[in-house]
Length: 311
Ligand code: SF4
Ligand code: SF4
Ligand code: SF4
Image (tube, rainbow, N blue to C red):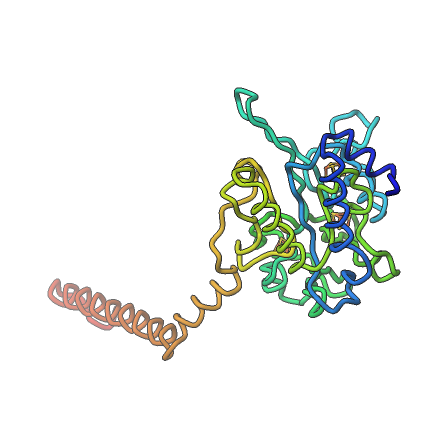
């Protein structure tokens, strides 16, 4: 069997030859051509925090592949050092460490490419839209009016606005759709990951892969579940972690998506004209109270000897 540099690196990282081969097979099934948008299926990422070594190669590759300005953060302009997602950073690796330093984990954050994206649902001009085939949520600058409603409604706090630009953009991960369109097999972050901590593929393949890892490693993963399988109606970016998802900054969310929740609320309000009727009843009550008060005041003035028509 031919040993590649990637296999050697995996072995050095303690994944072992067997694990490396298995991981290679997983990558092979999850990433190549059949998994690109041409496969006519929703695509996404699977990030396994237990395999991430925090090298940040994915952060740098993402920044370069997307032509983003370097965020030198607190380095005084010396190094690429983003501290959070921003209009210069679509993808970030953060470190969680417990106060006693006993527990730690890296976490990758970027757009989750929700199955029912609140950003797209909330955008009044459809500047954010979910591709009907790949499920990638992309932004269209020609339609955006800069209202920033997407920033407010996203449950994962992902879209970032270019405050300092004359013609500002809304910046977020678009799963490197420009690379996929150009025929590349995978996004920049997965293409460079040395440990396979983040892989690209069809969502259903990634989900099966994630459950396979849980089944073959009992007790390894937090709550033996995949974050993103059901949260907010499901997302196309999925997570496995040994540490609580909330500790990694991934919000605890209901299985219902925000657009579905909003629709239900809307339906309830308007069912049988409930909202207009409630507004009408409320207005009638206010008017009636005003008339009553007016009559009482007029009567009081009349009794005091003043003319009623003064009111
Ligand atoms: S994570 Fe936020 S920005 Fe990304 S698709 Fe979901 S709602 Fe939209
Ligand atoms: S898919 Fe592309 S834009 Fe999204 S995090 Fe990865 S490299 Fe960045
Ligand atoms: S390139 Fe892979 S191992 Fe390195 S920080 Fe990113 S996800 Fe983790």
